[in-house]
Length: 161
Image (cartoon, rainbow, N blue to C red):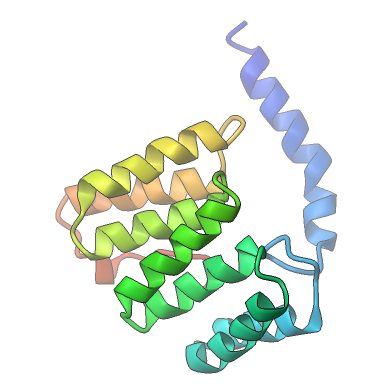
């Protein structure tokens, strides 16, 4: 029985690796040109321009959890923590198990010295991920680093960094 879980995990990873490489959007979105534009802007840290694209996306599609998650991300990177938290919460209202929003909200809690809340997000990620997922592993690592005294600003903490 102990071997079943790792074997199943390995099988799932090998079966999905090719599909993941072919995905047009790293966020699982619909690959729209506006989302692609926002992602490109985020990748070069042009957060303000990305926000304009993302606001247009949510105006056209108010149930787009990925766009709300990225609005949270861009605001967090601009240190607009209150707005970022609201956007993450909106993403999680739409999709309660949105692993990206759970991870990034956990990172926001670490940046704003709310360790208990960060651990709550880690627990939610543990429930949301079938076995384990990158978002869970990343947040767990960040929490461990923060607990060991590493400053959050010194931690490589996201896909985009």
